[in-house]
Image 1 (cartoon, rainbow, N blue to C red):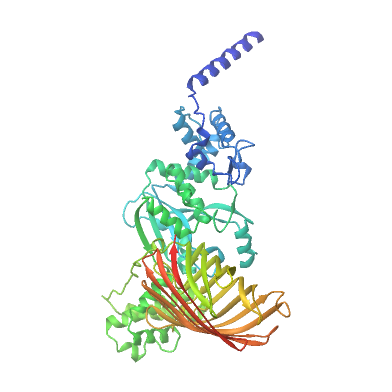
Image 2 (image 1 turned 90 degrees about the vertical axis):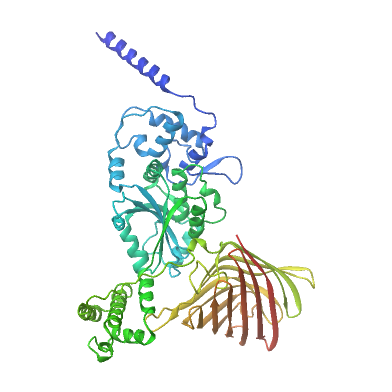
Amino acid sequence: MGQNVRFGQAVLCLAFSFSLQASEQPIPENLHQDPAWLTLGHYQPDTFGDGYTSQADDPAFFLSQNGKHSPRAELEATLAAIQKPGGGNNHARCRFPARDTWLRKRLQLPDSEIACPDYQDWKETLNTESVTLVFAASYLNSPSSMFGHTFLRLDPPREDDETNLLLANTISYAADAAAHDSEILFAYKGIFGGYPGITTVQPYYEKIRLYSDIEHRDLWEYTLNLDQSEVDLLLAHAWEIQDKNFDYYFFDENCAYRLLALIDVARPGTDLLGEVSTHAIPSDTVRWVVDKDLVEDVYYRPSAATSVAYRISTLPDDHQTLSAAIANGYVGTDDPELQQLNDRERARVLDATYDYVRYQSEAESWPREHAAPLSHELLVSRSRIEGVDTSARPPEPEVRDDQGHDTFRVSLGAGQLAHREFTQLTFRPAYHDVLDPPAGYRPGAQLQFLRLDARFYRDNDELQVEQLVGVEIRSLSPRNQFFSPLSWQVGFGGRRTDTGDDRVLAPYLEGGAGGSWALGDRTQVFAIATADLEIDDDLRRGYDAAPGADLGVLHQNNRFSLMAGARTKAWIVSSQHRQDQAYAKANWHFGRALSLFAEFTREDHYDRYQSTWHAGLHAYF
């Protein structure tokens, strides 16, 4: 009897073996080098050698022990695993549905009836018909958001124009930072890869509350033209990576980079990751998505701050003053100054004031004992005015963030420093300064990383590093009777400094804070209290420090940008002297690709006057 059983088992195993062999298709020799497979595995060519390394840093992402460095080994392990009998959530088909879909289609493998309840439930909960790429504008007060942020919104079937998109889910990738880390530590770890990156799924309304209502960031929504099969493949790969670790880097492997990989998986051949060189800035990645004809519609969602500021700006100046007085408790809602207005004027003032008070209570934490009763009084007064609609949505900016100038800049110019003629070449990988073409960028905002200024002096054929900017940030936000933002600046790097006898390259750290006030729509004046620190062996005590001030005017428009003013510093440690400077800088813009620039400074330093002029061409790539 036992021999018959063993004979029967052998026959069944042999039959299964022949059946499996009959269903298998020949595997192309170089299938593991197919761009679609490399994208699914996040493989990138090694810098040295002809191999590959996956950017995934989690062992659970691989089915082969050699999978991180061998696309072939990972493909063979995956192919064997998805054809194994059995089922359940831990089966390879359930853990890697995107790989399974691609391999079965590519090799014409028969489908199977393996159930994946966790994946199916997740997919049904998301209920996704289309995908929208969302760009949140830059936010200079947080190192993680200086360049903006992108994420994907998973849109349910559209039953009407008001389908609950706010309830739609989103997919985003961000650094899993420790809650106690300071902003400085966060920036350091983000640059050098000290954080794991995680993919998360959240409702869209939570993103709007964070970006639009709290951080005052406008949102741009780019609906992608993916069909249902491409949407399904994107979701399948999002499932594969959602709990897997990918080390996070600010400049390249960041939020935008991972989303490009998802889109590349959904539509093989787009090769969005091929556009990435040294860095992947979110606004640049949106530009690449648009250029690849992946966008079918664009929608602008202004932030709460933008909406409130626009509603206030539509009031006449005297009505703005009245609104501010009501909001701050100096004038009551029954005051004759308000009551004498006609119904439409009074309704506009009340609505603008109510929106402002609500914004301040939510975003700026106005005391509830002031905001709550005042909001109630405003609503009661407004309810007495019938038949007047004052709703007003801010107009869409003429130039979107992705339509601004490219962020990599190369500059070539010539100039003269105290009768020494020089030629200067500048490389700036990122991102924008206040004199660059302003369209698509926040007015008064400047953010530069790793800018290198190299000068060649003709009198002695000497090549010098004039300045190396590590980080340079400036935020000039005009103040008015409604909003009182702080204008500030910070920077560090190395620069040429005058010791009295020589010009040496010294590390520096500088910062400042103050205020800015608008003069019309495109011009503002600013006053910044500054502090500088320089460190070098050539300084008498090895370092020097200087409090100071920077007073100036900034004008920005799409054809011409100008900044002029005066700076003063009092060095108080090594040299005990003043350094005074008058300056003027201007750029003439020719589209978004080129700008002519000219700069002039007149400086009083160590009781001697010297002038510097510099002119040339900026090219944006």
